[in-house]
Image 1: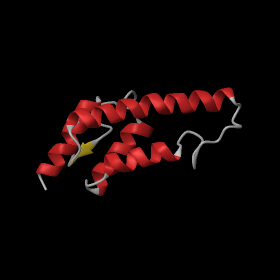
Image 2: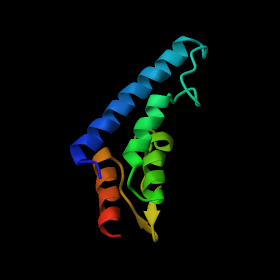
Image 3: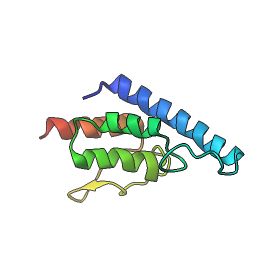
Length: 107
């Protein structure tokens, strides 16, 4: 598993880069298309795959959900992630890392 520091740095870099990509896409009126999704270049996809490497599929999906659907955790609300009916607080990148790490240690 990636270290906490490297996980957080990678997520922060990913956020900065996707914001750059989104702005570039907007400024080009959609004419600059960087990958399979107008907002995801191959570099972004590769970094996400590295972040998810070596963890179970469910946790990988949680990371992707946190990144894209929760927009880097900014749209997190209590109850949007539960395990066996119990709320999982992944409101920050640090809490996301702790959740993924706890899942790995409980397997």
